[in-house]
Length: 465
Ligand code: SAH
Image (cartoon, rainbow, N blue to C red; front, side, top):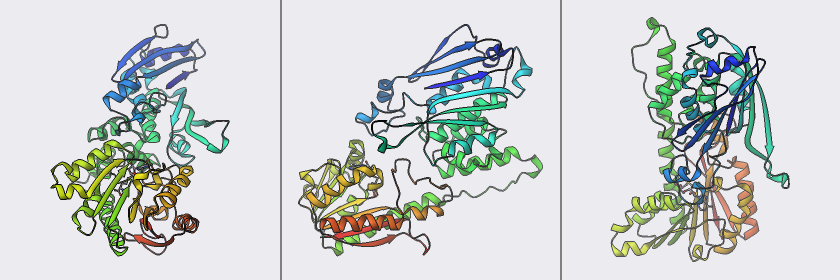
């Protein structure tokens, strides 16, 4: 991953003073998971370009388990992190250009205070979210934004475009502002942070956002995404931002209540969803149930408590998630009789698997939206054609309801790993097509508090053979 900064006001070699990096001396910095190299690709009185090149070691990354999926397996070794402009780049920037970011310039202090013509180029910036988000983040800060996109593979145009872009920002700004904008907005676009997001991230966000974040039209989204969608942190950040930006006499002394609305709603929603699934299983008189994409085993735990379920299986594609399920369910410590009722194993619902057969019912709760849409047909066959239980229960978010989540913007999905989210109509159309194709009937249930216009947060289909 590469960041270049170009300065074009003669003598352009002043860039060396501003960045505290000598144009004639390449430098290498050791980072936690690799190296950062700084050098100049052009040096002349008219134009000077500094390059920050990050060389992340994927093996080291996987061993440290930082910035990886956390799920173990091949993904930890084969992922995009070494090649894209992620939060690693932000960390490297503060390490390598820390002094420039704080606005200091020992030899030419007047330059650091001045808005000057700069161009920054970020190569392979991962961007999650709707089209136009890059413009909406950088343009209000005064940049002319040029975006180059890529198609994933020119031999397979149907795969569409990649989510990585090369972005060029041009503007007349102070260098420290340019660096701080990039520092904050890269992880906002990437939405993937390689380190745990805790309270000290608020301090970083406020420090690097000083002077521009409070008035940015997308400040909610920036804080929400930077703090990895942790509502409580975002509220705290805004309280502090208000305090900082307000004159002392205007400051309120009363503490604002923490709004924990979203997570709480989610908690209730989880419980409601699982309760509804159990009820549907009981009314279908299912005794043997397989939960595919079981996650940490919340549904399995409810099923275990109910004697009417004689045989219970949990499947997940992720081994580490299964380990957590085993822990949570305390499988080791269950009495023998109970232990015989439950079986956990690793598998994928897009591959035909004999172990999926022999159950009265299969549940697939909040899983299909994690599959690439072109893998859905494989999933349909695996479950409805080959495993073929009497009852199949599938639940997925109802996209229309997202308007109620105040911090989701148009086009945002509820979870960064969701590949799609469907409206009620889209889900119905899909479910009815599958039912007809494989000889099932299907009825629909809305889960969670909703309204007539947008429906409920979760939608569920109950298929019966
Ligand atoms: N059903 C659980 C977990 C939902 S999260 C609940 O309602 O709480 C989605 C889960 O699906 C994750 O645990 C993920 O590892 C799993 N998953 C994603 N793709 C899968 C696949 N192809 N096969 C099986 N499980 C998958």
